[in-house]
Image (cartoon, rainbow, N blue to C red; front, side):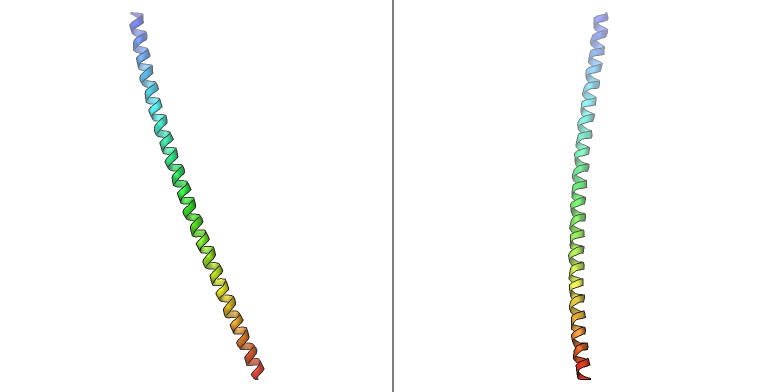
Length: 81
């Protein structure tokens, strides 16, 4: 009788071990998905930041060019006075 009880307990524990292994595998899959998602989001944000920096630099260059043009015009205007 004790052998039968031990066998049932062993079977029950084996089932619990398998269930825990399945849960662990699922948790690992979820962690991998979250990591991948975070990496993708980080890359996307970095690309947006780089694009915004490039746009800001272009605008600054355009502003510098306009300022230089205005200064040239002002110099010409002052020279004609």
